[in-house]
Image 1 (cartoon, rainbow, N blue to C red):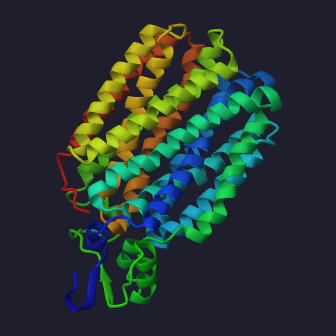
Image 2 (image 1 turned 180 degrees about the horizontal axis):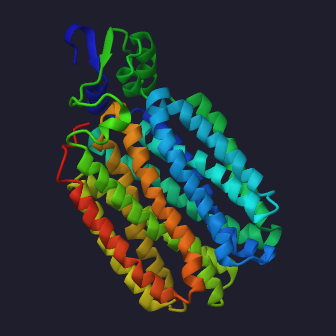
Image 3 (image 1 turned 135 degrees about the vertical axis):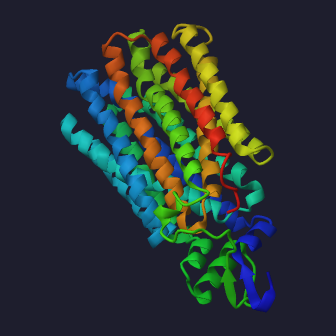
Length: 441
């Protein structure tokens, strides 16, 4: 590490304890993901009120529910490559600004068509936030605790999704559904100045892009809170890759099988989660449960996922991570079966929802923590964001078909029993990701 004044950035970060600045970065990324989670989940909580006020059918409103996931998919696919070319910091700032403004505008939509367009634009911006928060933090956290820290960061998404449910339960009956969207759009804009002043660029990204030592040295010194004046050059040793373009790396030798496995796992996981969180409030309302209680019960899914993410991340740093994630998906499938059999009026409904969120959302968060280690720095944001982007088509399917299934006469039990199948497919697919490629980045 000290040969001829050369500092290996990756080795240096791995060899040290986390500085106060690095922990502050964890908190900042946590807040970014939290407001992301709020704006992703927000429509599920206001949908019953909008459908009632606008006198439209659920299948018709499915276009609005599916618009943001489509935008998320497109945004993730574009943002990944953009981040590997232009930097994590710039893309993150643009993302948070974009989805904050778009969510505020959605509160003033006057038709389903306008709302669908605004939700698509919201999704474009949201699609850049999660992969770049994950990538930036993964490049500043020691690898020995990476899964635990990133999983803890991702509890922000679950807590944000739960918080907007509780906010909707309070705001919507008193001030209307517009107030929920205004609340969800204002918070990202409040966070933006803190990001501008405290969010650093990734040092490993700068090294990979050939930035000068004069630019990297003060950045590393600030983040790690130590004097680095003696170092004249900065490198980051990684296993060589045959491809040079970020997208090509995903399908280079040693990566292609893992890439497809990650895509399939993420697709199936999001299909289950989005159908559950998007349509569970409406199914509860049909069963005679009040809107505020339906929002509160649905928020329990996210709270269960928050605790599950911590457990999954902790286990991933101690056991083969793909096996931990696979087991969590399998248990999630079992929890879905129990939820479907118990029914909405069961005294065990809260426990069943918590268990389902614990396993499924915990597994999905673990997958987000697992993915950055699968790719080298030059393609890390691309690998993570393409997994998210392709997987988002699962969220599109889940968000859109819920209303269709309900209109076809599918009941609560039928829907949730059938969701156990994609959960099991996700469990098998993530096991396959460990068959190829060595996690050495």
